Length: 254
Image (cartoon, rainbow, N blue to C red; front, side):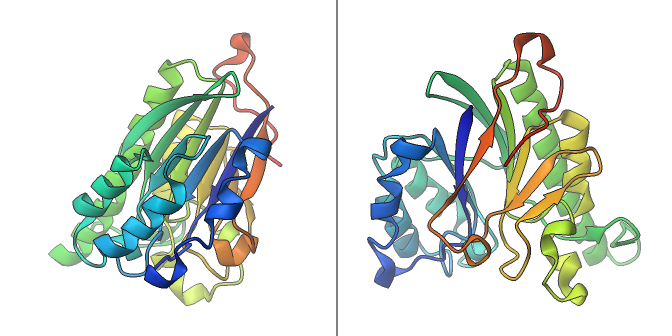
């Protein structure tokens, strides 16, 4: 059984150094890796990201992250990404990584993602250039996620995980005002996940949302925003894929 620890929206700043480290140091006892689902900082400043880096540096399990919208606010995504990578974190944007832990090969494909809404109530690539740019950005993120998941599938991993900040489904947004759903996620992410295949999809962003959801293709989706899970991280269990069924989607993610 593969144990996946995940949390998002920890929104760390200079006054929160050391808050999560004691919990993170227990990870080897209960998890094979840690996923960080974006919004790691409050305003995306290097100072704030250095706080995050110290929380996760030299942990005994691999750490994989995507950035969130807060992490872009200071317009220095490359700089804050470099700070995390210097701390040993795998930071993904339209990319994949394979980590080995507990004797398992775990493939993670990640993107921040973007908004746009869900089937029947979504933005379209029509009209003003700024609207087309909005939807095109969301589509580029989804395309990157799909390509990264396809790369992971070719690696023959024991588990495949999609890591995003924005939500791929409306299920995990329940509790948020309906009016802001288009700014919390996009169905394009779910299409990418279902097309390429995954055993679990993890996201954050929706602080007032719901933990459990599912894509139309049957992939389990979990909203791990810290205000939703109410703890330093939550652990999900995935059965390792059988070699003969490497193309099938696993059926359990508790």
